[in-house]
Length: 143
Image 1 (cartoon, rainbow, N blue to C red):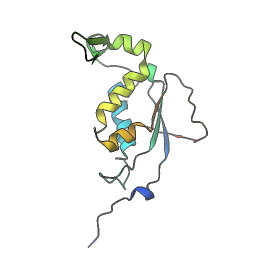
Image 2: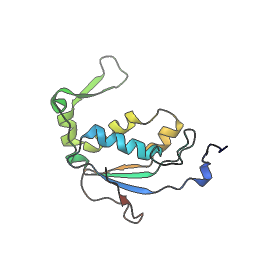
Image 3: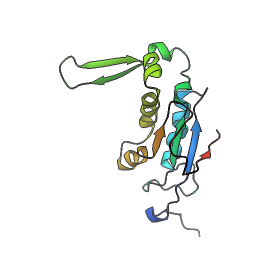
Image 4: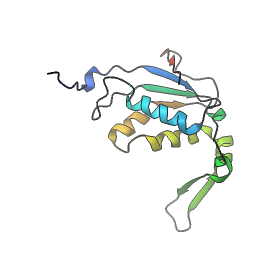
């Protein structure tokens, strides 16, 4: 009888991946990035241990929103004051802050727990092709 493998936090091996979001749907890219951050694609995945990897997303400004989402989808937040609802169309958001659009999509796909919050600290998003983490030698992740 074989035993179920349970990863220990000290034994987790973290790798660096680079994901190119150019000409890919925003949501599908975010879903794959969330899986990498959680470590769900590893054979050693353990639900109660943070066994995810570091992910660098480049070309977030070239990500595509399918259908009519660019004009009909809104990013909404509330200031906490009466009448303090702020709305921004995704067409404006993708032109001004594409990193935020990608971050919000990934954040919605990561669990709202301490493991999910810790996983989001390993996410690095850039609008263009240049990134700072060259010394980590990230490997290109293919879909």
